[in-house]
Length: 427
Image (cartoon, rainbow, N blue to C red; front, side, top):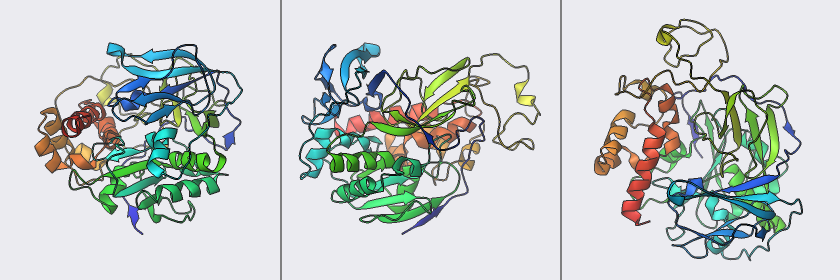
């Protein structure tokens, strides 16, 4: 057992945090199977517009890995096939009929085949590269993220409240694939068939990259590690116990764009529609650091954020010595506990200015700016030496937030990892 404690990082004091207990389920007439996180997969559609589908029924198959499926999060009629540039598949929208028909699940004796057929293998990520799991590459260990530290994200304890038995079943199941490391805060609970680790500190204390870096470091390309969050393990255990798929998760409606009455925690359908009442705001699926603009809740997202829109240029905004604004660089003293944030970036992208500022919020022993420059130059050999194998795009969310040069490091790193993985794994 290890105890992880960090001081580097940043808990962003943003107004509009949710509070209270989990409320009644949010209704949603449409749900969506979000396919945007799986850009590297070659999808084969198994359904067409107007088809009637059941919960857990296969909708998409991987062309390069036959038998690997993405399944329906709801029962009803296929209402829309969402596509992006060059007809890239973004998702499948289902008009829910309220009948909750369940597709018959396969036998669970063979672990990997079961995960492939039920689509539950898609709850895992693979390291290095932070890409969807390749079932032909056996992991040496599996890391379960049992805590959350990103802004507005519901605590992991909320996801498993009332489902401790299902969560334990999920842990026991995946422990038969590889040794499991469960990283959580103290008081999360005691579970068998895992190695417990406790963690404390500011964000990004919940990032699996940090846990792997300190417990089971990745040094070579063959050091394969899988990661999964609390809800993913619960979904596996729920399917094993009840012979049906879990169709809801605890989400947070947060941000100043939501009214005080609406902000809070809810048990919501997977892929629910995000057509919600807000006040001149931008609706984001995900937390303020890593979220994206989608008309539905993303595949892995448990937060819906509403931030006020702002594009008004402020004169001498860099000289605003006022206590109502937040600064991550301690330029001036702050007396408030939380601060209002908008979508305004206050500037455009420019060359690197202060390369040391990133190290204040990056708890890894990784030179952030040098690594970003290496991947921009596509010098992957140098990037590997600087720590490319150990990171994921989410690890650069805080450096992007504090960056005075407005460099989108999350996007840069995501594209670089996919490009590098494609070259080496021929996917």
